[in-house]
Length: 431
Image (cartoon, rainbow, N blue to C red):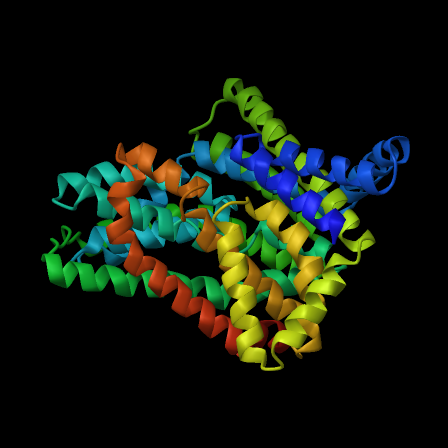
């Protein structure tokens, strides 16, 4: 336990000093290895574990999906999805709030990034909602909360990372398993919007002629076909998830450069550079987190925690609640990628002992950590939404609390009812 204490204390001190999380993980891991192994073997082991952590064919899908999302983000996709959502939901009381949720769900699933969804959709919807009489803090809150839904709806990079951390569970099964919980999360947020709309008498949007509405929906269809292309290709066995990432990039280029013509060839080098930067950050997080997971396993910390949890209670309901509360706390301080890589080896053996499948646990974990993205003090999506809305985190806490409650209720449903996660993969013969 001495190694665990060194690791945790060093990591928390570095976080408190605002050291980037990848370096916090790497430095605390190296220090722990140095004190428990020796300096030269520690450096070699850290380098080996970081290299082996990113030496995976499945991880090749991540840079391709990142690039595809960036191209889509610049290709006018957000505006078309918003227009389509307005045509479908805009005439309801508080319609723009529903449009915000639906647009974030669609864009998040296409781009695979909650931050991109908050930035792209929020940049359009928050000013428009304010013009229509919506409170700025409410607009920022609903953008932050709903932008996380796309992390469950494939293609999702974080589900690929969980597949790696869990020891090779089917990425296709994880992708399909995320649909129902992701849609549930979106519907729960829409229910919250409906309550606010009734309480605050929020305005309805303009009713469009049927022909105009149909045209706006059809204009967004090519963007949404990316999901069909990726998931259809994986399910049919024609392509692997990595090859599907390549298809996503090609399709995004054709759509943004050739069809919509929102991206010029001169802009592509900047997009590629941004994709390289983002991929480098993600891979560094994966490498250092893999090394930390190794030292945790080397010191038998996961086994110790498993025994402690099972000793604490034999009731699966209590243990799963403790795990969820722990992950909610972790998600408020640590980014999703290292959280998944570090805590999957710790908690997965416990839940398997309780009879929960790795597939079910993966969806529960990603849903749980998604809430952390819009939770202070470190929630990246929360900061982006506040920056777009030009407001403070303290100001949006009041309207976002009911959204936290709705998201937590969905989390409990997904945790205790395996059907929501497992029904579709089983029906399609993937699990």
